[in-house]
Length: 511
Image (cartoon, rainbow, N blue to C red; front, top):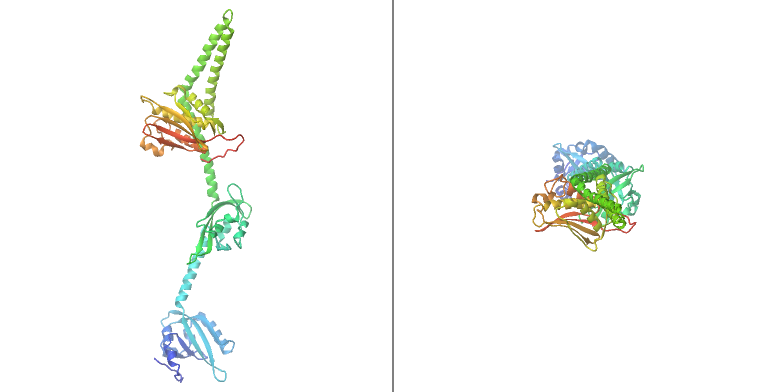
């Protein structure tokens, strides 16, 4: 539909003006509408007659009107030929619509202001998108500032740190260091658990720039006041639609309380393990009390008999000096054997252990068998390989392992027609693999998964801490213990480190 107003003739550009899909209006210098096209009517919700009865001031949002009028005055004063601004129109139904308005002033032949040509580009969708983006950014800022995690943002691949939240300052104890590139990360001072300084390229942010996907690092960080606090850094890369790195995010977590609690628990667990080992040792000695009396009775009785015979030889006329000296030597050997038994038992009961030395496997096995004495139904077969000569251990504790396993084997063979127990040792790389085998009743199916757990007895007797203690002792030596069963034999195997050069440092392996 063609429209004219206030005596303005329709020109040859009438169709272009009125049929354009872009809202266009001709506006008088005082702001009143002279001509509007259909698109402008659709934009505002008013018909042409309603718009021509007023001016742009009536449909402009009050918050935008002052700036709009300033632009109009500048055009009229000749300060500018046109202006553009984003503004809001109030539609007839009261709703708001955003436009990007471009207005140009036309002058007459004498240079006086004649009219404005106003072109309005509808930008509601863009404004909604901008508002949603601003809202999303505001939510993200709120989250970033309120989460109990320090967050640092960086550009990639340069590694330049661009921002960080307040929490990272609280955790690290100083303002964010805006490192200009990855080579500058050494200014973040922290240390590994062994006390060595963390190098710049070791930080997760530097590592994601090198292609690592989910790097993390726990460090003892030097805070602004010089104190040290454990922090965990976790980095993630930000990629664009093409998969290129454009940024990186590093989360900083305060794990100092967690780390110190873990260290405290570790100390307590180690203390409990020591107590458990000692409890097991004392319990084992209770079991061996009767056997000990018997074992001591043998050498002491022999010593008494040797002394009685020696006395008779010396009171003969003439004295049998050579035979008497032989009796004295035999008495000495018997007393020394009794002393060895007492010393071994006293060491185990007192818990005087912890020193690792080079120990001959043959001597360790023989000492253990001597401690077991007549409590064993049969004497164990001993097989020690040529390359399994020495191990680096706490002798008292490893004797305790052998005693536990041998006593279990002795219980298992009760009632067997042809009982069999073997203690063996073979070389296995840097370790010696020791084993105790028997042809007894075997391990019940329900016990296999909990065999080395505390208070789970494989034999149905005792406290059920023997195998648990064995595992603790072996693992504290850097080895492992396991069950190996066949149709004929039940075998407990455990590995121990081979002997070390004199003066070589002992590398302790945590349990």
